[in-house]
Image (cartoon, rainbow, N blue to C red; front, side, top):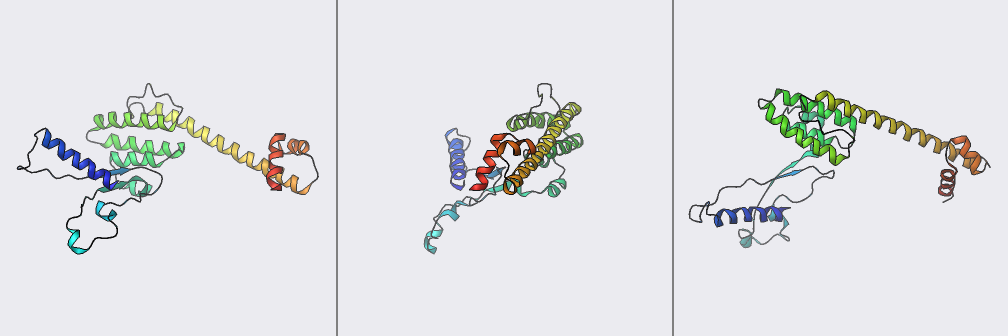
Length: 222
């Protein structure tokens, strides 16, 4: 990333000179490089290209080495409590992205965003921008919601809330079903370990398919 940022800044300056926005004699404007990162893993890249020069050069060479430091905004480092202290649209967006694939957490984060928008002095403009972004974000998550009629998080709040509530109910149902299936599998394991029953009998007692019981038996043996 430090090398990429250095390339971006160099290309920006080159563009300014080629288009005669400025000249070498007039000088170049200052640049504030920012990296906005929303990945699930922690950011580990160096933040100054000079730190990549290894081994560190001797003193007389250091002044000739490139330096370019960027400002890192790592969304994942902010806790919900920290974001809650910053009632800004951007902190609301961070909260939505940090919610991940939990529909329940997402529902709470969206409710917070709506509240922030309602208090924003540029409410209409902020609402339009974040609504467009949220629709794309939900699509990337694969959310099965009807987004065609969603034009405003504030005005269409009830419609979005209903869609998200349906996703939360589905999430909870899938969680219960997964827990029930794990319980059935554990019952089958216990019967395999403690009885001489065949797979068909165990499947009927545990409420599993025979193939599942056979797979569990195979895993236990190995």
